Amino acid sequence: MKKLFFLITGIIVFQFNISAQQANEKDFYWKKVEKFTKMKHAGVGLTIGGAVLTVIGVGVMATAETEVYNYGSYESTNGDKFVMGALATELGVGMTAGGIVLWSIGSSKRNKYMKKMKSLSFNLNPDPRQKLTLSYKF
Image (cartoon, rainbow, N blue to C red; front, side):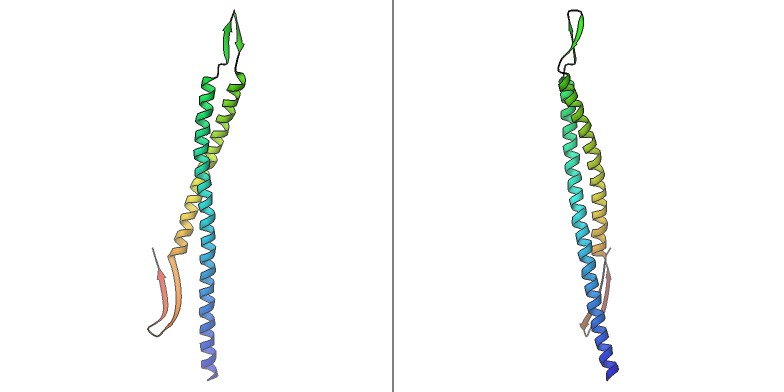
């Protein structure tokens, strides 16, 4: 009788332990999915914003007049406008490069953890017809 009691108690504790571990894994994977989704969205924003800033900077540099011929000598006009365009272009290129990296890493890691979260489940059911369930989705 004692052996049967310990066996049933052990099975119940084992079942709760496995289901708690699965819940912890699912929560962990879900937090990772959320984190990398935010990273992906930040990368998309940086990429688009950087591309827009680069185009604006190139446009400002193209319209800036840097030298004007005036009575036998060259005079510089709107030099500040050209410098601002160059700075905007450099900042835009940097934002675009960083955004592409964040976008690709966030997307690949998010997909990796989504697959892990959905792939394997192990359940012990007290149903008389089904004691143990192991499922793998691919």
